Image (cartoon, rainbow, N blue to C red; front, side, top):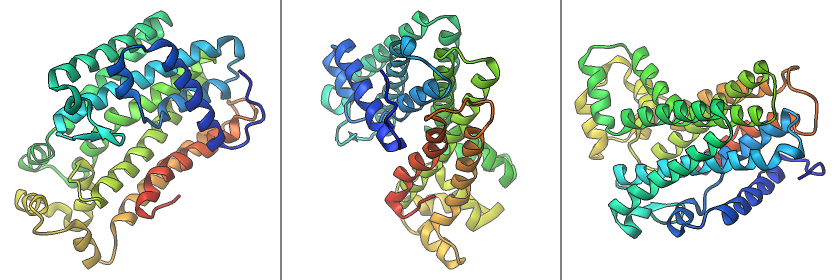
Length: 323
């Protein structure tokens, strides 16, 4: 389907959301899977289709690209179904989490069925797609495993006497696997569906990775600003305490005896600035890649440049940060 009159990334997003929803309506009949998919922003499918179009993917392969986009959304939404159970989150996308609605057992099985459907799509698109799916899903699971218990994660590092540099490395390792890997896979899959040459496929994967890192930093900023003690607390913790982080500090943060925002203000900075530098860094990296001469000139190339800031701003602007 040609969309040559689209000029902005926001218009592109709305178009792809409509197209993926059409794909869901046609191919997903299970009411619980559809419930789990409802209300998603579909950012990963958007990035897949943008990569496909920017790599000169034609209308003759567009339906295949849409199938891949559906697979990405199924896998991502399945991870959220399981995340909600592990984290005890009772709402998702403005409605009760699937496990609250149907029970834990049913939600776990629904999540597995979504993963199965996503894998089937990848297999039908060839061995390369299937292997990418498996590798990415494995990384996502490892990232989520390491993210399950923030306190245990920090304690393991602190008890080993490791440096603050290693603590930051561990944090970025988690967000790399949990979030950035799926954005990278989306962009890579779009380039593969467009039959792009290997050097462009690699470029698009790295582009997606940087978009994912920026987005997760923005997501973590919002979580911490709204009072949720997530793994993103590592960055402001190091900013305030340096190498003096200990279990007592973590416990005081957990039970509200101290506030990380108050501690930052005492030191002349704030939560937004701590995250903004990192967000800007990865947005700029992605934008540089979007301008690569390897990517053919088209109406979609400017959208590649626009996408990283747009996606992160949609998240970070909730707490007053824009790029």
